[in-house]
Length: 530
Image (cartoon, rainbow, N blue to C red):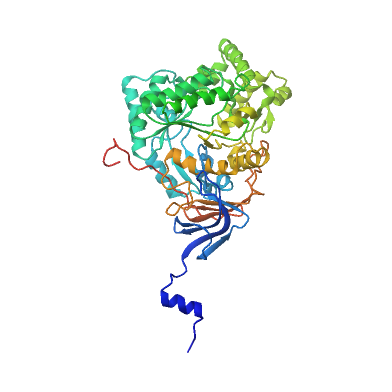
């Protein structure tokens, strides 16, 4: 007769619980659960698309075990503001895996920002899901997309029927799962909208529980000024009865450097008065935009890009445009602080000043030449992208330290923030300069972000939550992209799980298109069929 060991015999007699099982065990890591708290050392267990256990090692068996000793384990990062269309909407299935974000440890991205989000939220979600994407996406409906569909590119107020159409499009999008209304009031034609129009449209999102997410009208002193623009956004949220979220909060340009304390004070006053006001920020001192948006006055964009080129052909109008362009160039710090970043163009990787010298032109004339060439090649406005070095450390640091500011990349083609934002924030602001702590970095890249956007069961390592989990090497997690070479994946992510599937291992995609469209549940004030 086979004799059981004494311990095993005792366990059999008392009915000891069997060894638990999971599909994946991430073992022995330094675990930050996404809350504003310190880490533990232990395991994260996954079954299907959910986390089933977080805590001390308990010997669970699994088909897949990730050795996380010496590594940091955290919720997959959530990027609060992105422009990923060239990836998630690519015809190439490999591109749709969204490597720029996966390699940073990002599992969820917010899309439809700056006013560009389609009103056709349900159809877009179906297309993305059917095609297969690597990261989760959380969509906003965009004021610019809505206004463009109704009014085109024109500088005028809507008629009453047109305003009703704008409102109906926003209501439809909210009923289809949008998180709120995004605006880009700095950009034409959204810049043509008066505050009362924005409020009237935003109310449809507010009525259905949405957030007002804004690239505010002025981050500098182009029009109503940084502080005036901030107050405008807060007032829009107050009158529309909805939370206000400032996209990529900053003080842009030499005239507003040092204004971060005043900017923060305006927001803090609104928060103390009971209003829900938050922001996101990218950890770069150069913004990403275009020659057009950076330098050309908004009135010259009435009617769209083709009309702008026509205005260049009228000597009197051109003279007026050039005066204002020169002032905008001064505002941004001058010709040598505009790096031209569009891929495949003659000026790629050079400053506006360098191109002006090469062509023997004034910098404003060089900018106009670039716009004309881009128009002739059919690359407007993507063919005129720039990195504009217009911020200072003191302002960026102060904004980053606010507990209501979360991480975003504003990731767009041609700027290294698309590939390197989260590791840059960690390496530069946590490890090197110690502006924030590791706990701050993780909380404001995960749980705090999920809470702001009210994402269901995301952003935390908790039993029952979706298994979006990143494992990264705290020594080697680092950016590799630069302003000159912006399309280089980041290093140091050992593993990234998206909805329980291993999407990235040792910096390489696995081929799993595990991302989902994260639509909000149908809110009140929607047709029963929505």
